[in-house]
Length: 230
Figure 1 (tube, rainbow, N blue to C red):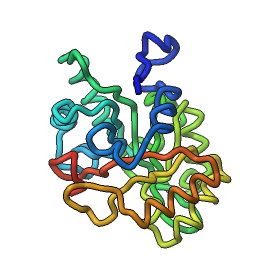
Figure 2: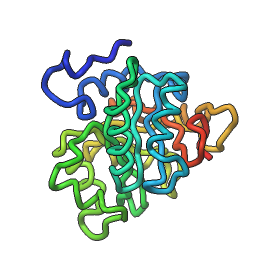
Figure 3: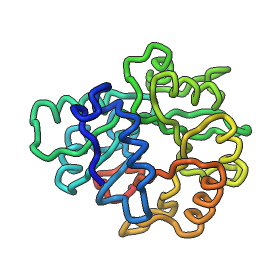
């Protein structure tokens, strides 16, 4: 698919282009990641090993068409990679959206909510961008999801089958709170080469479809290779 450029959409910066990202999520398949799209990656700005600059260079070498850096409670890596892209100005660079991973409370689980295509300068979002998990009422998934939406972003439940409660329990509850999608295509056992885990993919896809949610994919890279988790 062709991702609309900022010039074509004309209304928001490329990193906040919610409509273009939604269009990509609607097209995601089990084969989209890790060679075409990757929406879950970490840098040294949280718990990853890649510098933001090295990550974006690797994304270019792979030929990614769209991506987001999703450091925990930080957009520093996103900003650094964005600056590198602006200075290098690659001819055929990927669409690079804002991203962050936020810890939240859902059914007494510490879950991770991925936020995409939001305004990183949004005032209400700043409490979640200080490097650490938030406590109290602001940690409730409902509040996190609402804050992401208020910042213009999309909210996605990360790796839904990695928590104490099951995906079949968590996804419907998250959907009731207004979440936009689920990380359907995820490699739970770090296979090499990367591929989404079949059983979990079937379950997450089925439940997410029932609630009309978007499907996303990502390697959850913490190491030096964007094609692997570790």
